[in-house]
Length: 357
Ligand code: SF4
Image (cartoon, rainbow, N blue to C red; front, side, top):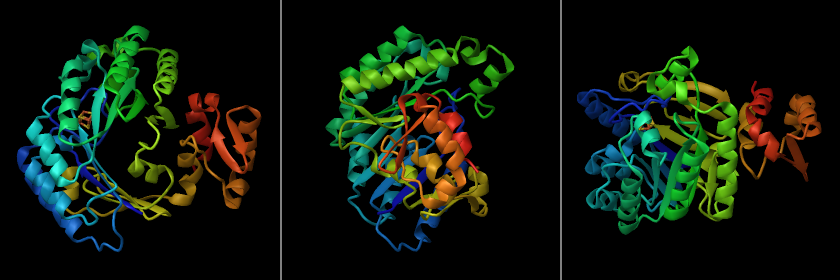
């Protein structure tokens, strides 16, 4: 059953590490954007009933609750098996959380990133560990029981001790799902630019080394495992049965349709992308083809702990690198399924590069 993604690219601030097509845009643009988004959803010929809905961005938790309910009313299939709202901690009130639940939201993904004050300040965020703890209570009291917490390994000022402090909070808060991302260093974020230039702004001179960041990630895998939160995708961990049904569609190349700026759609074979900037999207820019699904099968499927079964064509195209990685102990095979070994996960970018065409 397919999924639906809605993009709301508006944020209260631009976080220093963020390399998404999101940001702080003029208020009047938001009103026009919401009209264009509603129009795109209404114009969609629904030939199937969605199983999952995902509101990402951006910070859709800042969207006016009435506008959120209006958008969700346009999507068939309620109650959805999974309907996720990405939320920034800091202003989640009981009224807001109850409005989300009434609109059909049954899962909240909290962009916490860190529970340590100095690290949080350097990202440009304003929450604290105590605020996150209180707001998780508010969300649960509103009847939303499925909660994800995002963490980033490799933030400025992060140490083994401070990383352990963030993991202690995970143990205290018992979320159903945790995502652990390693800091991405590229030109698309202000922190990434500073690191690449050798600058000091945003704490760029104080980010952990690649080896330290990799060690933080490995610590997280072990700690989460002991808490019964198992890795099912390189960056995603869940209690049994709490894996994200929506996000699994991306890695299994199952169909989904995306609405809004920068949103991707996939019919199982071909992916397409809406214009990246909200202004271009409102102006009605054309959908861009991104990549044929067949070209992505190994690349995305290997992200999953369950692995992927290469097709005869995959074997023809990638026989040499697959055998090389099997010999090097980065891949393992079991009854025709190919998956990354623990070492392969740590070197996954090297592996994936070979399968990108
Ligand atoms: S990290 Fe999230 S809240 Fe921060 S700017 Fe990016 S999309 Fe917005």
